[in-house]
Image (cartoon, rainbow, N blue to C red; front, side, top):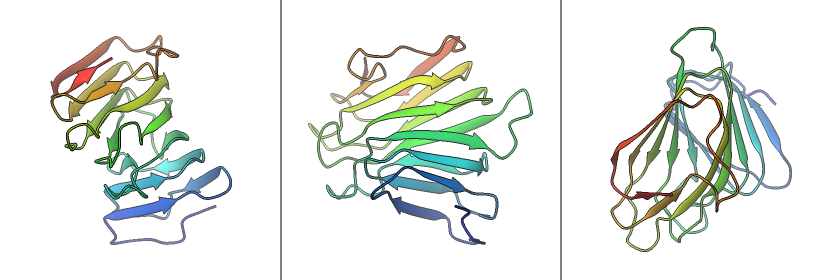
Length: 173
């Protein structure tokens, strides 16, 4: 359903409970981060390019997980240089984030991984549905893995020409 007239709130956290959800962000203004937590698929429609989607909502072990498919649809993806950001929250355990990301009509996607506690920050992402030509990965922690093949089961989308992980501190698989 539509998020009803939310304004002036920078960070929004949503916990998915029993079913897949579609959230219309058209009436949300001023949000910089929208965090999702749980095991359900979430579609964010009319997402402002300035609002980052975050997998997990808190480093607390009961709120650090997300294992659904996050689909991002920008409010305006008509340009030639549209961009979006996906953040990964600091995790309380390895693989608390084990998710798929889908994004179409977005030319550049940044995956921004929070600093992790040693031996608790490995994450798995299926990014085969990210149709961006450019993918940037940054943040993270030395010694922690970000598996962009989701355990070897997926590859980059055919549109992806460039992956820049020069600002990522961990290991990419």
